[in-house]
Picture 1: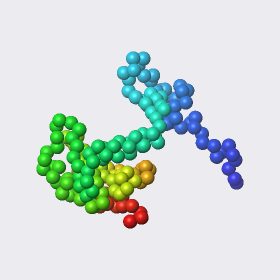
Picture 2: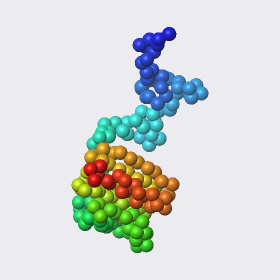
Picture 3: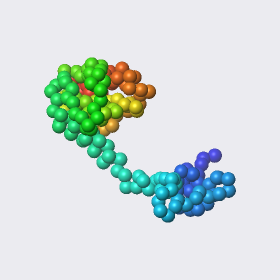
Length: 183
């Protein structure tokens, strides 16, 4: 028997993650969720949680992040095949950590990058040729990750167990995602 058109429609009103504004029991032991305090100090739950993202434009945020990375590369103005260095705060990373990052993250001769030092973490941001077409970012810190963009589109993310793992895999990922398909 074919499902009717009505059966194909999602039943939004009965989904626990959708806050329709209705105050009804949602299976929480007979009690409706409590209202947050009027002074705004209560936990961010329900409608208040979703209000945090109200008006959030994902495309704009993605473009700003990509532009931010490209702007850091332009500001540092590294030569091809080299890492430039920028420190964003007074507390710099230990010199031996920076040396290790430079030693383990080898840039191809046609790429350029900037190591952005934030003290507790280092962001290795690089681009290939032409500048800005492909951009990669390897964040080395307590939560190490890799992100790649091609032609302004986010194409890859990888989260690592730790900084050492990110460094070991980072060089390979960096080259793979910076390569221009026309090379």
